[in-house]
Amino acid sequence: MKRYILSITLVMFAAGTALSADTINLPAKNGNVAFPHSKHMAIKQEKGCTACHETAKGGKIAGLGKDWAHKTCKGCHVAMGKGPTKCDECHKK
Image 1 (cartoon, rainbow, N blue to C red):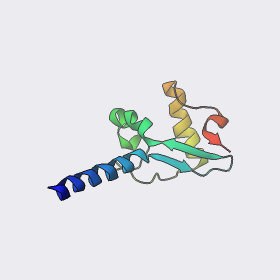
Image 2 (image 1 turned 135 degrees about the vertical axis):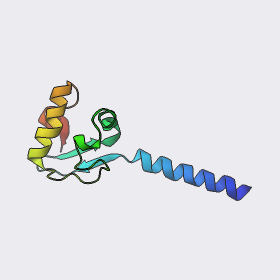
Image 3 (image 1 turned 60 degrees about the horizontal axis):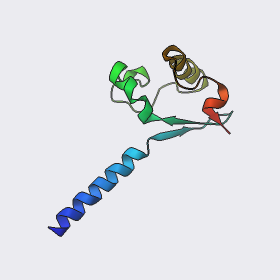
């Protein structure tokens, strides 16, 4: 019984750790961009993963770079009226 409880506790701890580490740090010339994936999950519910990702399964983003990010990320923030739109709001030195 003790092993069972310990096993469940370890699984819950590992799952919590994995879910809490959702900020992706993207290197950029003008300062790194921290991307909080969990804050963007509402978009997933509305438009699906393909709003950003190439496939519905997610994964890497084809063509991710300055031009793509400014068009897609900043464009979405402007269209939705929320999120950072100025250089220093995304790029942290």
